[in-house]
Length: 168
Image 1 (spheres, helix red, strand yellow):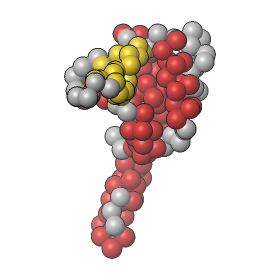
Image 2: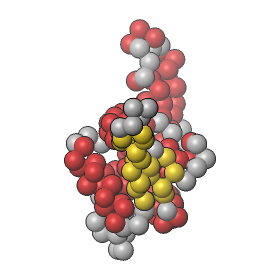
Image 3: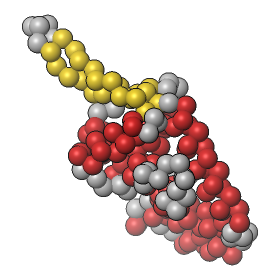
Image 4: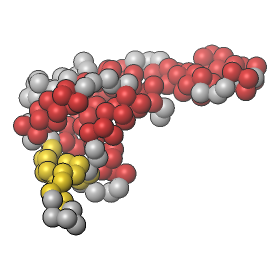
């Protein structure tokens, strides 16, 4: 699934606010999803990305533009709600001084359950709409064409897009 399609689905997740967790907004959900994806990539229930890396990835992949202060607010919110645990990591240098390293984020089972229910809600919303397959095919085709350089685009690719619009 391309990033812009995921971003559109993430936008739809905004409307599915849980009754139990009313404080979460789409930024918190994007941060939680990012941490879950990072943990899943390494097949662990913990990760230790730097805050700068989290901010950069949120901008690139999720189109979420927030400051470091806002990131800390959402991380504290996720921690208070029981989705994650944070542990500061401190290292001792050879000269004996202490230095801080990136924070360790440990995901709770509640985080996985929350994201799973959000995915189910979005899936049911898409299934209620009759044209959901068509929209995904068309959006995927559009993203594929847009990612190509202008000179590399051929009429055949636009014909494939038109076929995708007319099919399904």
